[in-house]
Amino acid sequence: MLKLIDPILTPDLLWALAAMGHGDEICICDANFPAQTIAGANELIRLPAVDTATAVRAILSLMPLDGFVEAPARRMEVVGRPDEIPPVQREVQAEIDRAEGRAWPMGSLERFAFYEAARSAFAVVATGEARGYGCFLLRKGVLMAAA
Image 1 (cartoon, helix red, strand yellow):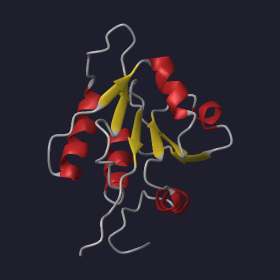
Image 2 (image 1 turned 60 degrees about the vertical axis):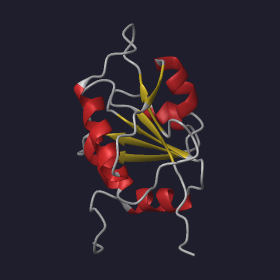
Image 3 (image 1 turned 90 degrees about the horizontal axis):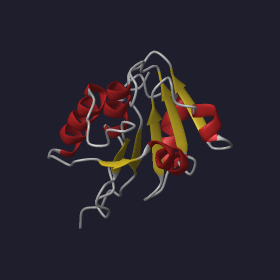
Image 4 (image 1 turned 135 degrees about the horizontal axis):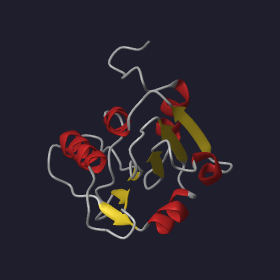
């Protein structure tokens, strides 16, 4: 255990967050997502007892989002209803807004475009989220040193 570090942040997940560079993405996905297939040779981290919003909250407690792009957080669109925002996505949006201290709407990707983008993620975090469409890409930003 470490002080001030969320205990769901496993050693492998802490390593991935620290090793990622500016612009690298991490995929946080639900239990239905083909995580092993999408991760391929990239890092696959399993959090089977954790829901997606809780995982995002823990990750964003350490990782800044990329302020140099319009949508540093993207969600998988609901098939056939791209503008629908299911509860799991609203919960993650609330975690993003809380972590950033402001409203920062997510971008979205069609299901197969999401799969393709997730293939290049630095790591895939497979949660135990049972609700569908609990799949997100978060782009790492930078922390600027004080002058």
